[in-house]
Amino acid sequence: MLLTRASEYALLALNIIKNSEKPIGAEQLATELCIPKSFLAKILQSLAKASILESKKGAHGGFILVRKSSDISMASVIIAAEGKTPAVFDCTQYTDTCPNGSIGSCTISPFLNTFQHKIDTFLHELTLEDIFTK
Image (cartoon, rainbow, N blue to C red; front, top):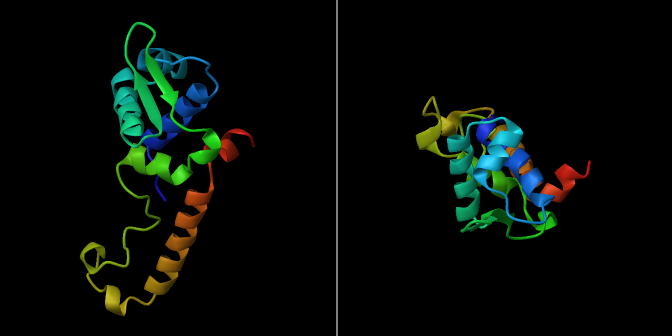
């Protein structure tokens, strides 16, 4: 599974936001994490659109968690940050995304689907609380 910097930056930002008692702005987060503000701002907006964060406007504005970290799955963070469901392999159970166009005769397709299902289940069960307390 390829997770990009978007997922990494989302998790780093969420860890800081989770531990803050007040909203934190994108600029402060970008400075603290030493990452590009414009890229981080897009990620934070995606997390807000996915109802993981809430964006507070005004002089004391910034981002806060919408729910407890124990109620936010790793899957929801990745999907919001990446803009798609994470896939372990390029091919899937759908013929139109099989690189060889031969999903029906692919000998490893059942294994790949089982493996992907296990990863999906794990990511839906794993919460931010699990990640940040281990």
